[in-house]
Image 1 (spheres, rainbow, N blue to C red):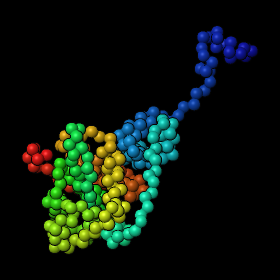
Image 2 (image 1 turned 90 degrees about the vertical axis):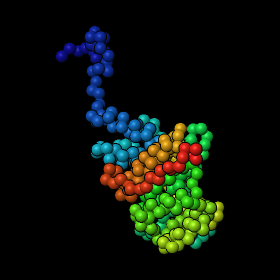
Image 3 (image 1 turned 180 degrees about the vertical axis):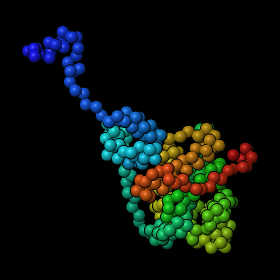
Image 4 (image 1 turned 45 degrees about the vertical axis):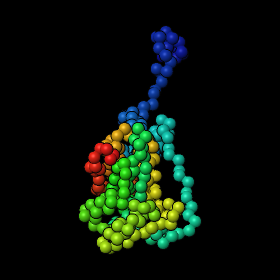
Length: 272
């Protein structure tokens, strides 16, 4: 064997010295996995690596959360910050602390969320959830929503699923209207009204509304009301699917698609 240094051999052959060293190779699927993680992080901007891991499982990847976390941090992806805990001052009889949901259909909750289309016009979203299963039962989108619209949405859900034992809400005029209270009482649904100015007493719905705003509304521009309905309904379906998986400790997302209700606003365009 010739007593010649690596440096001289490489210089004579015109090769870089690094070509003479073994290069460690990562997993064969590293690049494809990284691309999928980045794509999911872009699509679901407020998801952390654990929820992205669940989405990868649903897409057919066999990967653990530690590997996803390593790639997540290597690529500089954003990990959502923890939300501060909210305290509560005192508890009203209608609060979610006094009456806890025990089974699906035990307690529903409903509330309103406001948003605007690109032209600055306001629209409202009636959110209806099941507190026990955390399923979003309906998202009703319209320029205006009155107590008659609340009754119509509830009636369709009651026909489809049966009425709940209780329904929780704040003291908004659409919820405390005499027609709403009388109708619910006749059906046998008990109303739970939280104390004024105490949104934490309707904690399940407040949490859902926060997810709706954080994961969709804050990141979307709605040019028309029709577009808003389509995107909001698509998000609702994804939310129900993901919620079912989270309740199974991040199980496979593809095993369940939540059912629910889409209410179409068929009023004339001038009323929209």
